[in-house]
Length: 255
Image (cartoon, rainbow, N blue to C red; front, side, top):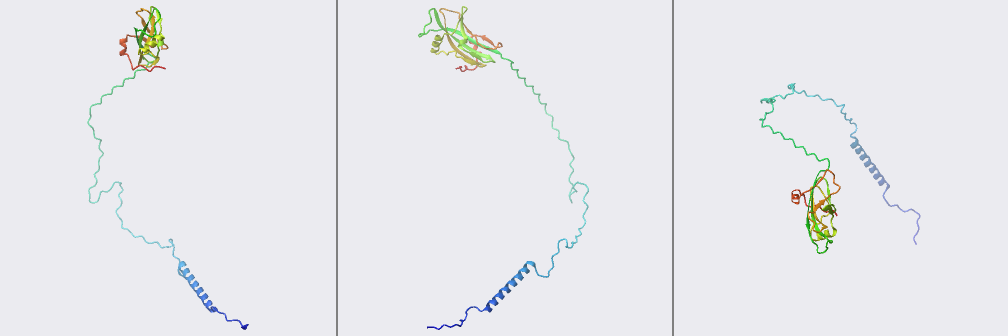
């Protein structure tokens, strides 16, 4: 069995004086570094501050040689060793040769005054022709006839044309359009006088059938437009006179 000894054993490690030397060296390095840093930032000790701009002595200005005085006149002096610029005298504008006088323009003609109210003439013509129908027969003692009407509006107003406004005159009697006969007339490819509002400078035409006494001769067509101003004249002319008065194609019928 090993014996127990009460004496302390020997300590191992770095001696204390080594740590003292290391600490002194570190302090020396820090002190030297701080000193050199302060010198770098604040400059060397014992130096004077630089003078300000106001404290700087003023330097003497050099004396320049005096040159010739500037001319009092605002005109430019002549160039050295050269001729002076020529003075241009103001001249009058050139006179152009006189040419022939322009012809005086004729005054434009004054526009014709428009009529204050409606005016003009409504021309119409009518011719009567007999015809027979194999479908519908006239009453005893009567015959069928068809009348061609042409209307030209040379007025400033719109004229309404309708087959109800036409008639035939015979021996003081007035005969109005016959419905069945007008239907047969249309079936014969004759254009019916359809209702239309006839504008100024336009025309229309069509057929209307009647039933009149058998053997009647000298039958006169009639046309009586309604609602026209008194200033507009309604005049009947011969059928051959209408081509020189006719306007555009027949107007579109009113439906």
